[in-house]
Length: 300
Image 1 (cartoon, rainbow, N blue to C red):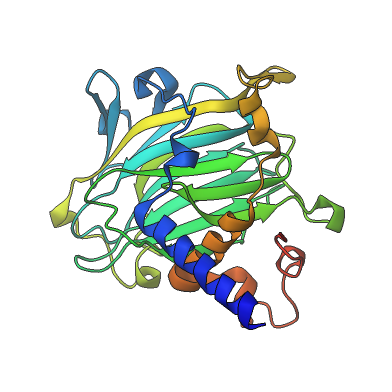
Image 2: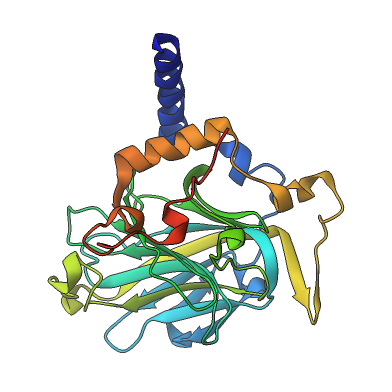
């Protein structure tokens, strides 16, 4: 038992170092970053508040009193790995939400969310994540970030394959949602998605449960995006999808799961930075947790 405990301590120390310093192996590697966000996305809401610069390599999305802004990918995808660098709104961002997500649309939609809930100056951002499958969401997990997301760009990643959905920050896994259809839990596997980026006003709930409202005297609120990648993804074409890497060794993303070290890192993040988990909210679920919460999420 002592030996096992020592190994666990060593593993946690390595996991902590991986979180603090980042892991380039995942989010750089063979990833082909787009040279132009303008070529990959359309502004579908608040067009005047989407400003492309640096020859389309960077886009700034702005929220003012009149409107926010949203980008939508020109392509749709059925499974893929999606990476996007984001620099969040600095200073007092209370009431605002900056997001990066994939979504099918429709009443029975599938969706995977990164939503950054703004806060008053000096208080940390809260990362709100959620997974919708067959129209059902309410699978919230929230995290306090271990860095200042307004000081520089950081890479946020969604890996979605038939086995699981994994969310990463700078190569560090923070969340896994496994395919548990065998246990009756719907899993996004049949509907193609668009990729979205947006900023909008959500003062009714975004900051401290809606107690702190948006201070429009500090507008406009600006978030910046760059370096989108869907190099490992299956582009939907009618009734099938095509991907340039599906037949190559890099197509291992289609069967990728977390290895032992990644599980240790994930657990370290959960212990130190997770602030809310629907799977641990007994007040919300007094008569038993959702099915996916009682199934082991992974074993070595």
